Image 1 (cartoon, rainbow, N blue to C red):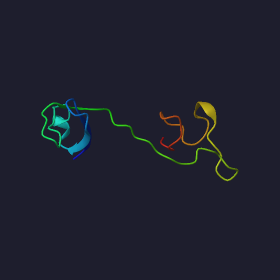
Image 2: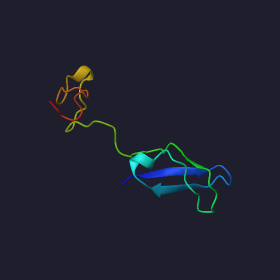
Image 3: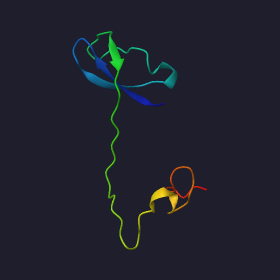
Length: 78
């Protein structure tokens, strides 16, 4: 079951709640008991190296690199 972030409009507390996708947009009750907490857009970030090396060249622009699927060729799908 996915986790969603909510913000309380009364006390501004941000908290997460695990619930089915079908209930993701329903208001939630904050940990302090206030009833009007609404879902907020969560920010997802990754960290890693985005540089190419001689042993691992970056794909060419226009899908001319790895794969050649509809994703631009970055995942080697066909």
